[in-house]
Image (tube, rainbow, N blue to C red; front, side, top):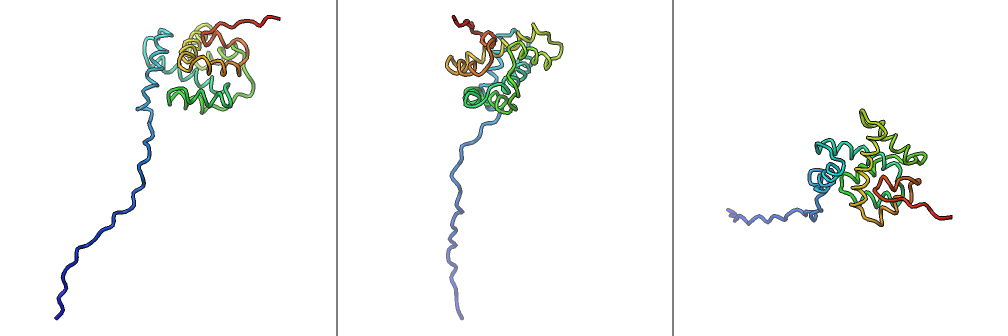
Length: 161
């Protein structure tokens, strides 16, 4: 008769991949509420929801007009949600003047007039300029036709001939 003694079972743990950095989702993007709150204050909107709606509209309009390295830098300098809005836009086929840009935003906001749309655009873009800094704002403005500087809260000086 053969007697076998039980041998301890050795288990080899499966190879686990090293932990990857966890991607942040929109809920973790604390910069987005701060951005929309700053827009709410600048534009004197009564609710954060209204400020968020206006911010999304203006950023999506701007996203089609900023291209190349400036578009990438702008998207990276902003909170994740704002950067996603900028980066997801199809580039415009032709540049719009500042007035045409404001008019195009007015068509996206129910009940807006050119005057209220200018207020909305300026409220968002002036906050944006504060957030991204002087250097990047200058780079973005260099891609846009004359007239946008005022929308970003900057004086636009005419060149002396």
